[in-house]
Length: 208
Length: 208
Image 1 (cartoon, chains in turn cyan, red):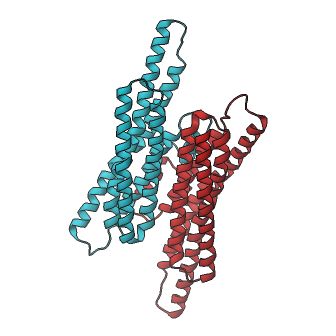
Image 2 (cartoon, chains in turn purple, blue; image 1 turned 180 degrees about the vertical axis):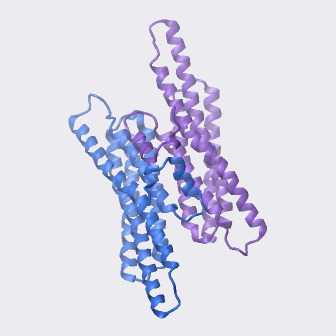
Image 3 (cartoon, rainbow over the protein chains, first blue to last red; image 1 turned 60 degrees about the horizontal axis):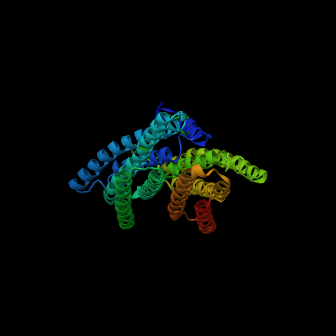
């Protein structure tokens, strides 16, 4: 499958808009997250002042490097999400004439749904890590870029919310109760933590 | 200036992440809005059921066509926003040795700041129109795409919030009090309306 980030942005928008089920909300959430991280990276390259303490500049540079790695993960998760959903749909199209076929199809659907839950869970996790770093950027980044940081945080929150919705909807049809409970607990914990981190970053931004 | 939507998505992300001031949050908000609209367009192409009433299908098709037009505006606003901000920065670099130069520079800065306020205001307005149509999509769109609609609404809300922040910050340095008051009132009114429309669309989605 072609990587979405290699396509022209207009082609990506057209792919989202087409009636084909992929790319859909899961991919859009991952790419929106990558956009939010990019804005934080931009401000991570603009320190508050030339007179800023050396430790502040080091903190900002470290945050920027970590954000770059998170952005690459999110860009790749745009593809992973679409591939997982394609796998689910392919499983639903498997033959179901005999008992063996029915059993194999059921297993394939369950396997696909697990992959389709893991991809947005990874997006949620990446957005959470970026929002934790947003506070450093909000604190040490240049004041002229306050609205860029705010937009970056907002896009990451939207990405996280969308990813969490996608995990929850894909868990619904899963039969493996252990997997469901574990993934569901992960979503709740990451979601709670990232809301706190986003609020802290926004509060720091107001005080910058 | 090259159109951002003609670039590969990876190049757009790199441009956002670079320390260059444009593209920044205003452009990211417009493009995130275009992504949200694209998801609504996708679901606008998937009616609820084959047995759905003819009027529902017509409503959905009309919403999809209107959304396509809004998406084109948002994609273009990604460029307009960056151009306006470049105009502001160019104005700040104008010479200021003589009184005439100082006066001309001041006028150019003010003109640039107006353009840099109008672009995100247009983004906010477009996001508001899309969120109004989101309710139709939430009501008549296929239930299997519920999470796609939710992500679309979330991206449009983030785009609107980011655009509103950009209008407000660019209005701060404006001296034309009439323009400031009028633009500020527009932001408040559109923001209020779109929050109501987003809440209504989300409520409809829950009930679908």
